[in-house]
Image 1: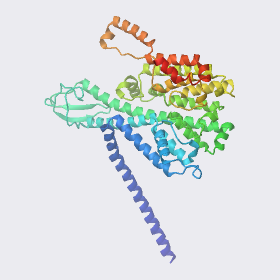
Image 2: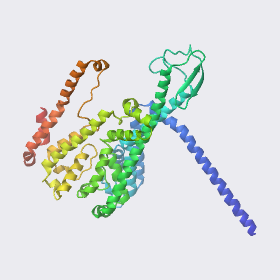
Image 3: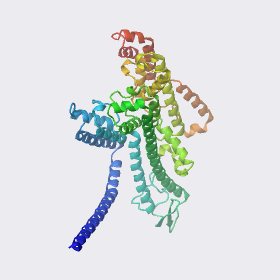
Image 4: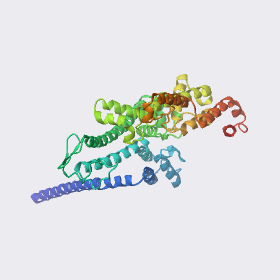
Length: 495
């Protein structure tokens, strides 16, 4: 009887083991099928629609998915207050598009909902979405390159889009063997003719461009993960060391890990949300936390192209030298929006520093002894003002109540929010080949460019005069807000 029982148990175990093996095999085959079936389908959709339609589809799907999950989870204040359906949908859209607008206080959401919002901010960030676009571009280029290497060319048009020069017609050349060399070149053996070296060079550039886009995708992925990991580790370390900051989180009932991940992802994505209702006002005395978040703000937004180019240059000195050199010299050909030419990236970085410096000096001169910075030491005021000015471009985190800030500073902040992230003060003017060969034209062009660099646009002069009037009339703006308001000043200046 015991033998029968033991045999029955062994058979059951064997059956379960076989079933698990079959299940694993089924899941693996299903994954492979979806990978090889859906990936080309998604790539076809990506290249069938224009970039605007693709982004609309991506953010719409992300917003509806986030809304569904947020609506399914219960908020922390479910017994007292539950957000309306429209408010949840608005929050989901705002988070997915990193617009940093909400009709619900952040402390209403539960820990699970905060994690969902974190994922939406991560997937909706500009760095991540641009990396996804690089993946599709890389895969599409990979397919095209593979087809060329295998010689599977259905039709060839003579012209600039043809992979083979026009003078080599297929009526004169009989392609018999297509062989891919280790160097990445495609060699065609012909009975009557052989393609010259220029075609080999073009093929090599095609392979190099594909490898460079692939390398760029890995660089952006590494940049995204490393910067946020360092920020996450720094925030967790700071909250564990500084009791005042940790006590704020614990009193509000927010988990430390959730706060750290939420804050770092939101700051890097330039969303501006924090799990607290008061944003960064409750941490106005924690200068160390501001120093940790300032690099996240800059590296994820205005300084991203400059730091990306520097990262490629550093990696090119150690690994992937050919790909890095191609990216450094052919930024426009790659077609990645955030990969700027060398001079442009330097000018963008200089412009970012200049704007922060101007805002810092204006804020300090007008608000140093105001109620907005009241109760802070000199060092904390400096760090707080710097944090506020860095956030003014696009992130939106704040340590002060903006309703108490001087109108001149608010006008400056509005202009900073209006400017695109990669604005450069000095324009870059390309010269034609004829101009490059004529020294006289080059000298005249330099004089003209230097003069244009010192001349602002009409809108810039309007903004400058509005800020100057707000500074000179700041007492009237405070004492008589009916007759003296920023709107009245704007109307008078523009009129």
